Image 1: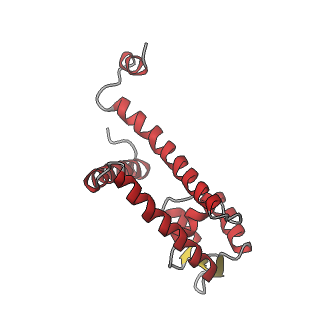
Image 2: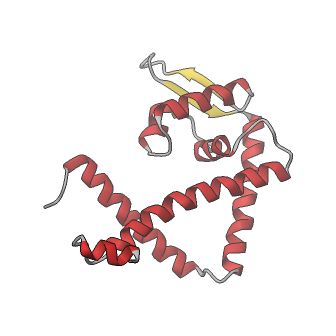
Length: 166
């Protein structure tokens, strides 16, 4: 019996199978994107930043941002971001300072070294965007996919904040 048949016998209907496939695909795509970053870092012979840290630096960008805001944006788990912030600070990629208004809050910003590094990441993103388009994924398809994923994110956020919508 195929997975779809098993699900149907359990009473799943509508987009249930596609939804389950989508959640698995999101996880696989994230891991694959980190693999792409890892490969690019290896190609550039960059050893002092891992793929997760590269993504963290790119997400901080030109901002000075609190660690709490990074977590609240949904990019990272608390312990994960704390560990990576510590490592990136030790490696000279981040500067940290306490908020003058709330001494418990720590803000981070990229160092000149990190700003130069993030340009590599932006160049890689530009290259990969062109590659994706060359493989036949047009801007309209990307936009439609992005809209669907944003709606899914909103659905999950609403569920977290308000519970099931029965």
